[in-house]
Amino acid sequence: MQVTALTWTHSISPSSLHIPQAFSKLDVKRLSVCCASSDQTQKANKMTVSVTGATGFIGRRLVQRLHAENHCIHVLTRSKSKAELIFPVKDFPRIVVAAERDWGKSIEGSNAVVNLAGMPISTRWSSEIKKEIKQSRIGVTSKVVDLINNSPEESQPTVLVSATAVGYYGSSETQVFDERSPSGNDYLAEVCREWEGTALKVNKDVRVALIRIGVVLGKDGGALAKMIPLFMMFAGGPLGSGQQWFSWIHLDDIVNLIYEALLNPSYKGVINGTAPNPVRLSEMCDKLGNVLGRPSWLPVPEFALKAVLGEGATVVLDGQKVIPTRAKELGFQFKYPYIKDALKTIL
Image 1 (cartoon, rainbow, N blue to C red):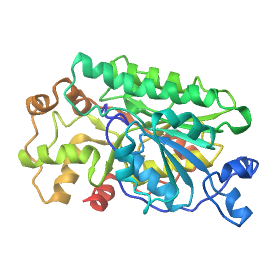
Image 2: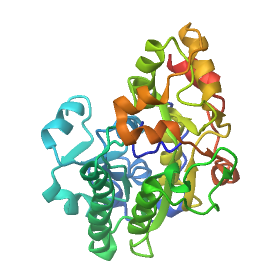
Image 3: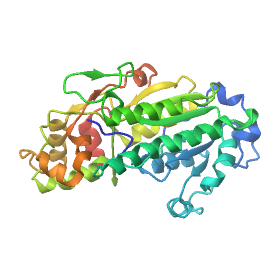
């Protein structure tokens, strides 16, 4: 399924904070640029992280997680008023909201940058919308990379965690994709290739982790918010044929994976942000029906999805089976490896 970070993305799960040696060598002043503390050891254990896309589905939860762990966050936004509403200073005293003109100053004062910005793709596509979907990812990524590269060497971030999407692989009902698989040849694959290529133009001294994100499941938004009304309207059932693969991840797990990539120097290159057990969409809908107490016998027809999303329905009607080989090699522990447990927790 070509659903991506491009589109869906809620819940936080505290996990133990470990600080790799790479951060202990950093200048203490820069590490604690907005975290005043009398305890020098505590200062050295905290990061300052600049985040684009912080007001989105994944971004909000990531910022909450970083804040809960006492890190400092620079929210890089094009709408300062919106960001300040979402992150009021009384609740988030360690957050600096930076308008676009101040992004360079924020990045220069950060240890790490997380790039999650991008226009949602779960919408009716037109040639203009498709252009905007691509530009919203590549334009922001290019700006972030330029600002990192132009930072003084002594105050340059050391880590860039940049979102991309499983749409990179194209779609298939039979193939299994991991990080070594080639890219597809459709529109979303093209977007992802350019998106990743732009992130990789960053200074070679900056560690880069590219997280290819699947369908993110969580409360109050993301894929489920789009699917449940259709599901309920048609009495529950698969979307389209139901044979397409659904490569999903719980919001807790994608936030934890990004958080780990910030801290752990082993996390670099491409890492699939998907749960280890993808399912056919018919199975996902069956489990969803069980959790919602709805029958799962009547498929939602393709025409209904196309009426709502136009060409954007390809996000739901096509799919791919993506395995998080690299995350497993790195020892990442998924809190929700199975779709049934994820849906139960969410719903």
